[in-house]
Amino acid sequence: MNTLFIASGVAILLLMLLTLYRAIAGPTAIDRLMAVNVIGTKTTVMLVIIGTIFHWLEMFVDIALAYALLNFIVTIATARYFHQRKNFTAAGFGLRHRKGGAEQ
Amino acid sequence: MIWQFDFIILALALICAVASISLKDLLSAAIVFGAYSFVMCLLWTEMGAVDVAFTEAAVGAGVSTVFFLAAVLHTSRQVKPRRHGRFFYKFIGAAAALAIGGVLLAASADFPTWGDPASPASIHVSPHYIINTIPDTAVPNVVTSVLADYRGFDTMFETSVIFVAGLAVLAILGRFGRRTRDEAPAEFAAVPVAGQSPIIQAACRIMVPFMQLFALYVLAHGHHSPGGGFQGGVILAASFILIAISYDLRAMIGRLRERWNMVFASLGVMIYAGTGALCLLLGANFLDYSVLHRILPATSPIMARSHGMLAVEVGVCFTVMAVMVLIYVNIASHGKSDKGL
Image (cartoon, rainbow over all chains, first blue to last red):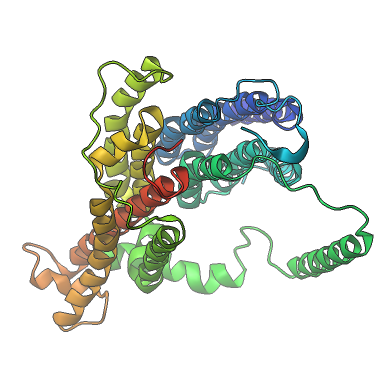
């Protein structure tokens, strides 16, 4: 049974590596945000899987719950950032960097 | 420790760390840094350090990235373009970093291997707490008893440091004299303000009470499971920050006035130090909770230590919650407390 959980954990971690490519290479900040959101969701699953492997699930469910509750705050905060900046252009999302770094 | 996971998690952590310091777009760097804290939480969980992992989960996933975003909002999104041609300085920097890193790596060869039962820490320190915690304090979670009882002094000054950090943010960013603070609280508008999503507002409004309930559970259940005052306080603060993000800052300040927030911040430190002083008044050492059984009804000295820990955890929770909200309000609104992220 443990082999199954370890195998699925390794699979999820490899998927996190793939998602991390989008988080780092992603041309816009929105791409990175989505990728990090996916990584956060996978982290929640990984916490429960690790708890199952340790036969100590009740300890890890609390952490996974805290993650699930707090994970999306960053997403909403970033959305509000773009809303506050009122910068819905390609440059505002980070597609092309304007020279000088000044932005409205 | 599960070796199959180790390599991948360490690779993830390294890639995230390098990426978050090398990205030129600071907003993206903050987001990737959030991914780094996810991965570090996984690493600690996998090593069995659940309390540390919980703190990282609450702080990294909940508030620190929001602080970074708020700081980026009010400063600049781009890093300053560096002047090129300073090869000499770059060389000195790289040489110093490599030298220090090499010395640290060489020193790490002398460390005992991870989880070595013959290492000094496992022989002298850990068994003492593992054997004595239940007979001394009746608290199953050894980490909580070490933090709040055996090393109570350390935690008290950590709480004070958090309080001082809040004061420092207020002193640097807070704008005094301009009385926009503590105006009439803005009610939750029935019709959302233009540009704010009613879906997000409704969802957050439903979630906030459950988050606060969960925070109280984490605080109160810290004796038996990972968690405690610090984690509970951060989750409590995150629920207020969620109100501020989904509605606006005034709606949050209407629910938690800044003046009351400051009262909570200092009240937490006072509860902690006051519990210690109470022990002193009852004739024992500072923070020696066992003497509290004289004033607590129907407790033994052992259970009094457990209850004393709960009291100081409540103090830590107050201070952490108030200071996190204070830092958010001041960074997000540039000290003006009018509108934030």
